[in-house]
Image (cartoon, rainbow, N blue to C red; front, top):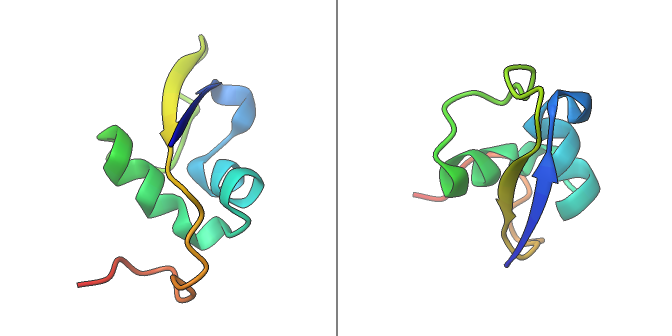
Length: 66
């Protein structure tokens, strides 16, 4: 796991997941790991740390496994 810093310029967890995990549909993993309820990063004008999990190519439908 790594940590990056994001702001409103990163727009959303969809964009971060696409860039960092190679799959925008895995945005929910970022949200869960970082305690975020929304995918929008617009409320964060200053950098905040965001934990990035290891990419998981088995998660192909964008839904959390149950």
